[in-house]
Amino acid sequence: MILRSLSCRFLTIALCDAAEPWQLGSQDAATPMMQGIIDLHHDIFFFLILILVFVSRMLVRALWHFNEQTNPIPQRIVHGTTIEIIRTIFPSVILLFIAIPSFALLYSMDGVLVDPAITIKAIGHQWYRTYEYSDYNSSDEQSLTFDSYTIPEDDPELGQSRLLEVDNRVVVPAKTHLRMIVTPADVPHSWAVPSSGVKCDAVPGRSNLTSISVQREGVYYGQCSEIRGTNHAFTPIVVEAVTLKDYADWVSNQLILQTN
Amino acid sequence: MAAEGKVPTLAEEYSLPPKEVPVEKPAEEKSATITEASPADEPAADVEQKSETPEVKEPEAEETVPAAEESDAAPEETEEKPEIVIETAPADFRFPTTNQTRHCFTRYVEYHRCVAAKGDDAPECEKFAKYYRSLCPSEWVCTLFHALLSFHCCSTVFPEMMRLVFSIAYGDLVVSLCFPAYLELG
Image (cartoon, rainbow over all chains, first blue to last red; front, side):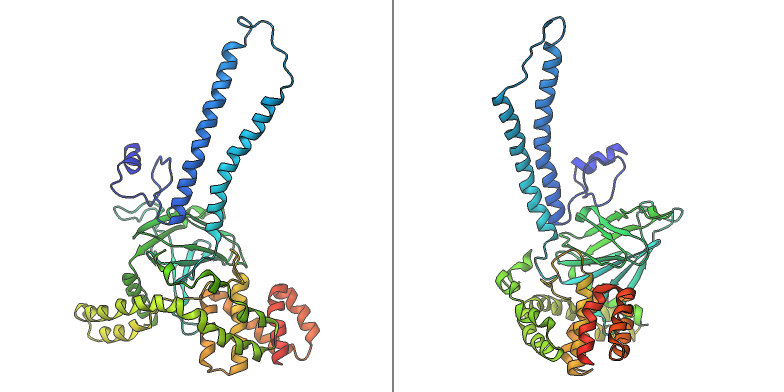
């Protein structure tokens, strides 16, 4: 199990688009946003390790030198201007170095930068999701809508992940700007796909927007991230990114299915 | 990010005022300005998407014909395919936030204003219908429709009372968006 997760981390045979047992790191990025999040994590980790090493050194040194045997009379310094200036300025500079990339990422994530090509509405229900592709509607009644239920625990086929697979996946085109509108019909829900770097809460009576642009074809798994009742654990999210051509195919097939 | 080249420049994207300013103005003026403003921001998004979709469609229709087992399924598909144009409501700089609730309401009201001003079959209103259908969850469309219908019936008779009742039932947001529109239309 651990071996598998290690191979997933280091020997990139297939990219990680679903949670692995004993996984420590993030899943592999499928959107520029997620890549940004991973990069920011690594940036911050640099400072984190720097601080860790520095603080542990001071701590160990203090414990080593200042004890009763080596230093029976403790020093009584209560004030030192230089050291106080240094230990105020230096952490501020570190915070600044963390804040700049962090804010840059934050604002690039929620900015409405380009016109999306497709709007998909994810509507949370207890306990399934409804997806609406309404760009192709010609009336209020007719709509490309389907429900996405989890595959029950005793039912998965070989190769499917337990409680992570659904009957109807959300099909999206890769390398296309997507607008996800997330809203629930009953209680608060959440729509989260780690590989896409998306976690959008769904609040009753309100529709939330999140933009994604999946960069490679694949199947991405996510789980609901808002505790909301007994079957909370049984509403996974599966996004299947395909080429634009396949997407158009899929839509036309779905439309034919729904009209018949 | 490949699409960025064809997307209008930032200056163009921000130049919404001709479309945005008349929101408070009477219905006829508003919808007139909308139709003028729309071609400016539409084509950029359209051209890029449409240029991709024809390639998507034509070869495919031919491929599916031999593949399809039933002879009547194939013609249906060929009819159906050209309809899939990859386009949706454009990014609107009146609603740059995560919360898009008001975006949906506004597009819905804009559509009904347009229809009221130009008539039911006006082709220029179809665009707004597409926008609100893309943005509003289908359950909301029903609620909004009933709200607007009731406004239309009652607001001319008991304007103040209707305003109060609807602000309680649907919240001030819907009222502030719908009420002026329907008072004007009478």
